[in-house]
Image (cartoon, rainbow, N blue to C red; front, top):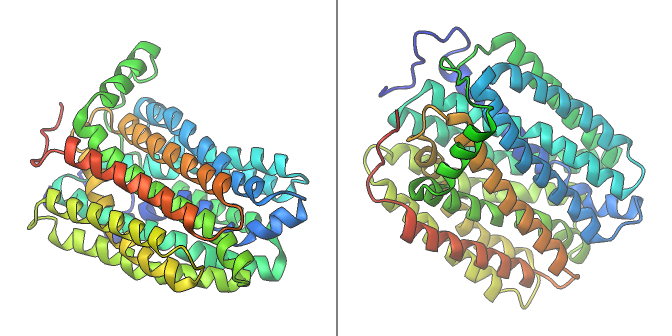
Length: 407
């Protein structure tokens, strides 16, 4: 397909409305990660926790998110995308209510893990549905729209979360997430058809699962694209986890002021995605991703080199370069990883998501472990480490020409 028309079998929403709904479904993951970030200092104070324990609620969310993808992928390959999506959204709604009702930091960490387990349905199944319904440059265009939403979600989410935190407290943030989940559940029930027209009856067989995951993990084309996207994405997680304390605890910003700061990075990330979408059919993917990697490494170096003094400008200005580079990378990295695997798109999407969230969990753990009220130095080192590894994977694994799809 050279455009974004859906195939003849599809009976759900079409055109921009379908793209918008799929985008919202995918965005539930990053939206739920950062929506409560302005509440982290209040959570630590309210539940008698340390900053590291409060940041660990993000780590446990990402851990649940990561492992659930290994379940949702093959389940959707076997039984279809729609029923798995509906069940997972129900789990997300219940877990959000549980988060709001917790009384200790340990309970919240556990509830966040369950919430992450439910939220991961969005990126896994949304990406797999895009893979089911679109091909070629049309897929890249849709992924570029989704990528822009993934950029907006971490900006809009803490902005809204900051106002809710300031007005109603941290529990209300989790109740608001539950309401978001209920809205998506209604829309999915009402407007989504089944996109998986070739269910794989062997998708849940243990031997088959091991074969699928093993074949993906040793495939250099798949792993090259996945690792470039996952390692640079991990830097975004470490940024959000760290700046909640750097900006609010060290610089004295209010939750609502901190939330509004997230919008500053949106134009940089959105610009990268827009450029990717516009030039997808004209400029080599390898060139665009390569420029993106250079930008993320450069931004990381600047964060670390300017970390001797804590200020908004010294952190945010270098991160604009990082976010722009990430915008250039994400859509091509996602499409490049999934394009060759139509028969196991769900499992491929799940494996990609697992690696992304595992890297994110590692990054947020490092952000909490090394941060001790000492500014952006630890953040700069984490960013530099992950972006340098992404560059190594890009230059050694990502092919210059598009791979051939498997039948």
